[in-house]
Amino acid sequence: MNKLPLGDMPLATFLRDYWQKKPLLIRNAIADFAAIIDADELAGLACEEEVESRLIVQQNDRQAWSMQHGPLSENDFANLPDSHWTLLVQAVDHWHPKASDFLKQFQFIPQWRIDDLMISYATKGGGVGPHYDNYDVFLLQASGSREWQYGGSFSEQSPRQDNQELMLLADWTAETTVTLHPGDMLYIPPKVGHNGIAKSDDCITYSIGFRAPSHADVLLNFSDFVADDLSAELRYQDPHLTAQPQSAEIDTAAITQIKNILKQYIEQPGLVEQWFGCYMTEHKYNQQQQELHLDNSVDEIIEAMQESNSISKIPGTRLAFQYKDNDSKTSMLFFINGMCCQITTEQQDFIISLTNTEQMAMQDILSNPERVKLMANLIKIGAFELQ
Image 1 (tube, rainbow, N blue to C red):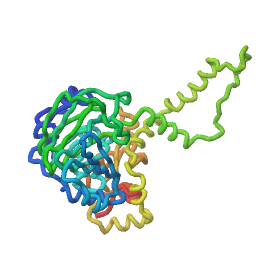
Image 2: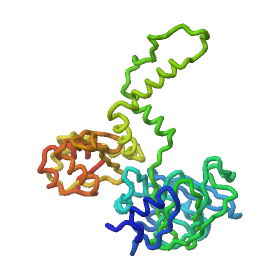
Image 3: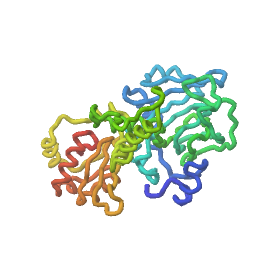
Image 4: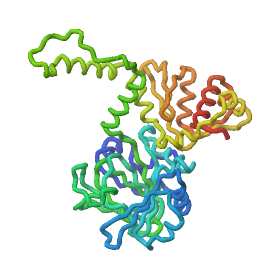
């Protein structure tokens, strides 16, 4: 898995000429590709309460779609037509270890930008209709074949079909049409229209999506992050208020004052940096993360570590790090599922290795008391587990 899934294209060329700029078809992106999950396993996941899934069926006139959210049942699958339906399962990497490992191939884009691996199974003619996404996506064909039509740039102002839930484009005409076979991959930048149609009954497609928070989400989340630690006694003040001719006027001095309040938090050293690391590593499903928390004390976990052979990252765990000073690199912040801790200089190499592996031998941890305590806490919060 060391070779990048870009065919023969150098990474620098892809980033310079295609990333967030224009679509790219990559034939044989992953040579000798072997599927990591079959249709039956995917259907089984879709029946689980905690797994996010959708079932999309084209109606008889082939111009309308219906969508059902999971969890699905055996009867839901038994009552499906022979063709023109699609099953989509979100975040398969959270539930399937091989899927989690598969995503590592796409870490040529910063891993904190990767969102999840969605896998779809479709019968012949199945698809979700013409649409666009607000994020980058790699579409890898795992089995069967799928025709992809793509082209044009769209936005929230673009005309839509009547089906509000699926947000399908109306009056859309493709600029390019290609057919993907196992191992082929299509890269689609944000806002580019695309439509996939299964050409066989065993059509499985992997969609690797990326986190691209909206400006609205950025502002809301940062303000919540800041406000959590602020005293209610910090208030708007105007000790230099002067008489003004019109009582209803909000003058420039008031606007300057409120701008200064906002600016002091944006410019507070380290605050934006810490927030962004926490924000981009937030677990996709908070409930799943909470259920993985252990009631055991840290001392009890450390004792159990002595009897274990290794430690492994739980699928869905998100990690990142940040140097507080890029020049000296004397201080590091480590982010785990939306949480943050400071790392000593001596442990920085260990943290970097931890972000690049799925499993680590216990002997590499037990030799250092600081590492032992850190890993025990990561086990307690449900980011890693003992093997």
